[in-house]
Image 1 (tube, rainbow, N blue to C red):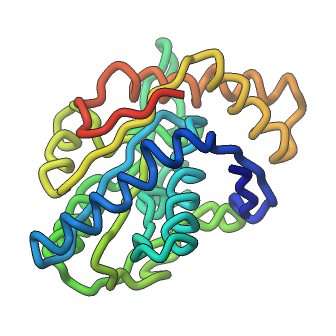
Image 2: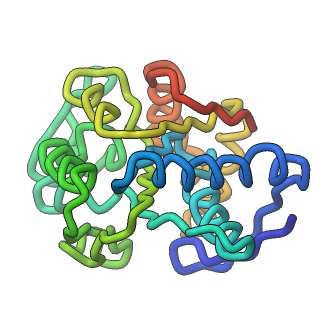
Length: 235
């Protein structure tokens, strides 16, 4: 099944095998609907994956598929709105490979997110509260606070580190009713991530350097340090 959508303001295409739609994604949507009815309250689904694995694409596809099939679509939100502000990242430092560098140079790593704020907002969503949720603006390079309102009964939260088994992060999944993880080969992720950086305006050399220094380090962390999910999807 071909899927055409907008990804960070750019038109994009994806393909989902008919067998996967019938055997994985439609049953998943029906299971979520049944779970919501059984529990009689909002349910929270966490979708985690390394960068480049297509978690945002899958979340958008599940929304479209549910609408096409007359199933209640999930409210989709992401953790990118919890990036620390650009000024904060530029003025705080970490050490990588023996060098002291500003956090802005590794933006997207776990330490560049406001974990306390993310945890508090997830707790509110999980409790069924109607609340605001931030979005990340790639033009401003900063979050926009309370850009959307979460009031749906089936909420799908996607992000790289939602299942990360590290202090502070490992508690996040306790708020989830269902967890999903996308696993992918590192070479496939590298190809996708380099292409993404080239599309954003970087030269091929700049794209490869950024991916090796930042994106792939994050991907390896997610692949090696994430907790087991209720459903794992292999690319």
